[in-house]
Amino acid sequence: MSVELILLFVVFAGLLVSTAPIAVVLGLTALLYFYYFTTIPLAQLPRNLFHSLESFSLMAVPLFILAANIMTKGGLSKRMTDAVQAVVGRLPGGLAVTAVVACMFFAAISGSSVATVVAIGSVLIPAMVVAGYGRELPTGIIATSGSMGILIPPSIPLIVYGVVTESSISDLFRAGLVPGIVVGLSLAILVVLIAWRRGLRAADVGTVRERLVALRRAVPGFLLPVLILGGIYGGVFTPTEAAGIAVAYALIVAMVQRELRLSEIPGILVSSGRMSAMVMFIVANGYLFSFFLSNERIPHRVADALTALDLEPWAFLLLVNLILLAVGCFMETSSAIVILAPIFIPIAASLGINPIHFGIVMVMNLEVGLLTPPVGLNLFVASGISGLPVTRVARAALPSTALLLAAVLLITYVPALALWLVE
Image: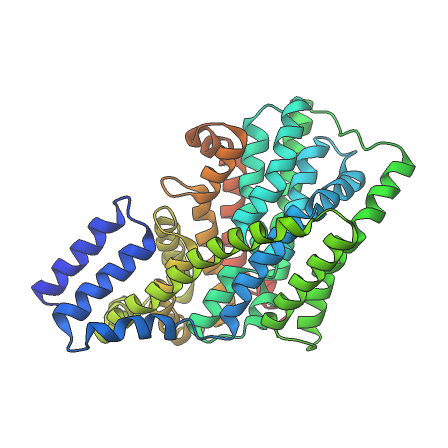
C-alpha cells in the first residue's frame, strides 16, 4: 500500500472519530480518492451517487419509514400497546413485558429500531415511571427491545445488506423471524425475573370487557404485519411492494379510525423524508466508498490476510463478531454494512458459511452497537425520551445487552435457528 493511500486512511480515521456525520466521512474520503488517485472527472460523481440508489429493493426503505410514522401519528402504535398490555400485563412487571412485546410487533411494521424506540418509548417510559419502575429500568428495556426487535421483518438493515450483497431480501426476512422471536421472548423472561426480584407489581389491565375492547381496537394494527409477511412469504408481492401496501393500509386505517387529520399528513411526509434522506445519503456515499475499496482491492487484501491465518469457520465467525461489535460502537448500522459486507462475504463463502445466516449475524452484532457508547443511537433516543443521561441509560441496559450478546453467540453457532424457514 502506497504512502498516499495510508494518508487517505489516516484522514478517514480522523474524520471517523470527529463529530462529522458518517455519510460525510464516507463521501469526503471517496472524493479525495477520486481527485488524487483516478482520472474520473469529478462532474461524474453526482451521477454515480444517484445511480447507486437506482434499486427497486431500496424503495422499500422510505416506504416502511412512512408507514411507521403514519401508524405512530395515527394512534395505531398506542392501540397495539394497550392490547399487548391487556394480554401480558398481569405478569410481574407487566408494563415492562408489554414494552418488550410491543417493540416486537412494532418492529414488524416499521423496519427501524429508532422508530420503534420513539413510538413505544414515548408511550410506555412515562407510564412505567408513574407506576413506580423508576427511570433507568424502563429506559434500558426500551432501548434494548427497540434495537433487537428489528430482526423481526421487515428490517431496513437487512434490506441494505440484501442490496449490497445481492442476497434475497425475502430469504433474509425469513431468516430474521425466528432469531427475532427468540431474542424477544428471552428479553421478556429476563424482564419478568428482574421485576419479580424487585417486587414490581403487575400492570392494571382493567376489567375483562376493557381488555376485550383494547384487543378489538388493535386488530387493524396487528393485521398489518400479518399482511406484510404473509404476502411476502406467500409470493403474492415483493418486499418493496409490501412496503407500498403497508403505507396504503396504515393511511386508510388511520383515517377510518379518525385518529389522523389531513392537516397532519404534510408533517408526516416531511419527517419521513428527512429520515429516509439520512439513510439513503449514507447508502449512496457508502457505495462511493465501496468503489474506492474495491478499486484498490482492499477487500481482496483483507481476505488474503484472513485466509492466510487458516481459520476454521467457528474461529472466523468469532473474529467477525468481535470486529463488528467494535465497529458498532462507532459506526451507524447501514454504513457499516455497506463498508464491511463486501469484505467479509467472500471469506465467509470460501469457508462454506451461508450468506443469509451471515447477514443475520452481521445485523445482530451491529444492532448491539446501537446500545454501546459513544455512538449508540438508541441510547441517545431513549435518553431524550426519559431525560436520563446517556451514561445512565447505557448502565441500565447492561443486563439486557449481555443477554443480547449471548443471543448473538447462539445464532452464530446454531445457524439452523436462522435458516429454519429458509431451507
